[in-house]
Image 1 (cartoon, rainbow, N blue to C red):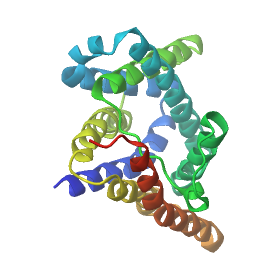
Image 2: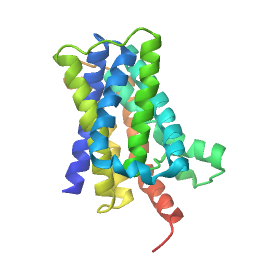
Image 3: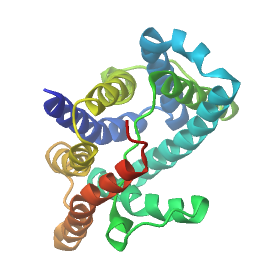
Length: 246
């Protein structure tokens, strides 16, 4: 059951590439992101609102910083999605697998084996911290949308469908499922399952968005996916070795 739930999460993440691309074609980008994260914040507040008080000042500050970084990443990803295909965005997003060990080395002087340079660092945070992150994203996108004069009431089935799926299912519910599944499935298996996000993005991009990348484009996607699948178990084992044993 946990495995099927995680696969469903990656499928939702994959299909949201199509939904978001369609939505931002007819609704302002930063307004969409602000409303999306307002929905996600509200949904998470139901499950973890009281836990925010347990974070303390340092925990709240950490969540706010992480939320700023998360917002920057999602903002750039969505802006890129406006300008390229769903399939390309999905597979390029998978390159975080390559970049994570690099930033670990540059910022924290964390050295790992050569095979992990294409690995993913699987990070599951507590509900309260995630709630602060979502709130920080909402606040940031709201300020930008107001400054650009983009904020307006969402309208139409396309926009509302994308907002509900991304806000409730792809953000709030997805994080809760990760926390639940992490207690029941090994980190290595979760890492492999999460690589399916790029696969689903390619499938839905082909099926729903009419993406046709050609042999060169799909060949590059296959290479990226192969690197992810080969390296993720090793990265997960490395992460487990850093955790204190019971």
